[in-house]
Amino acid sequence: MNRIDETFDRLKQKNESALVGFVTAGDPKPDVSLQILDVMCRAGVDVLELGVPFSDPTADGPVIQRSSARALESRMSLQRAFEMTCQLRARYSLPIVLFSYYNPILQYGTAAFYRSATEAGADGVLVVDLPPEESAEFTDHWADNDLHLIRLIAPTTPPERMRRIAASGSGFLYLVSKTGVTGSDGLNTVDITQKMADLRAATSLPICVGFGISTAADVAAIAAIADGVVIGSAFERTIENNIDRPDLADRIAAQVREYKAATYR
Image 1 (tube, one colour):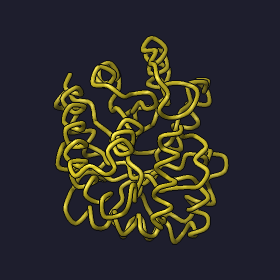
Image 2 (cartoon, helix red, strand yellow):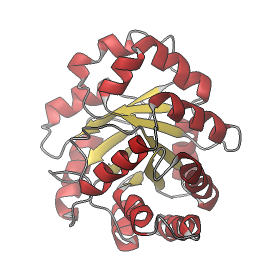
Image 3 (cartoon, helix red, strand yellow):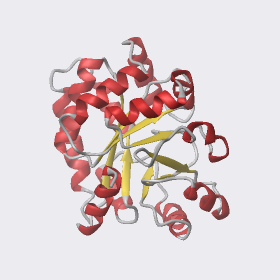
Image 4 (cartoon, helix red, strand yellow):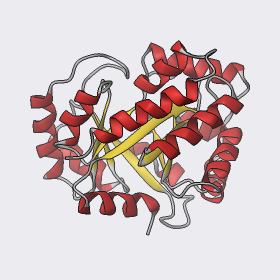
């Protein structure tokens, strides 16, 4: 069984929601980034989402855009993200999901991507800008189900399309909480609850909610209705505001512990 499946099964038995933590690989520079990822794994993230930096991250807000720029300036690449994944896999058994736009994967080669991702120990991939109708050229190269393809569901997605998207995904579904980009403020839990109900009617996969979640209170509110809570911009904001501080990793670890405590139902 894939580590993603095992993790959500285990958390469901404990009546816990998963904390899915995102950071951009290589931000602010590769050695510091690895320290940050290391403390996130030790502090309690249930699923690690490792962002592959890209020059035109159209779904992301300014905070993650700047994190990608810093990582690219430090010569971070998809290949180096694989190497980082391999280093983390040697230390930790938690699921690792590679988060990328399609352009870096296409440049790397879709078949080569699958081989490198599975050899590095990744458990899933989330490709932000690859719709189901266009993804066969990517997934046709997959030899088996070792790598889960995580699908995104927009808040404007109608129920019939939800079913089609869910049918082509595996691992879990990522429900975007609002229109707009990552890092924007404000959560409408009434709307999210309704979308969750529509999506649960379309799939038996776990559902994680992301975008606009930044406080422990936000995490608790989403954890009450979802199988997982995705946080990215809040971690990247901490990195950006404390880049030169020697206790940066400790601050991230404290943030992880606070968020994880809020996932207990």
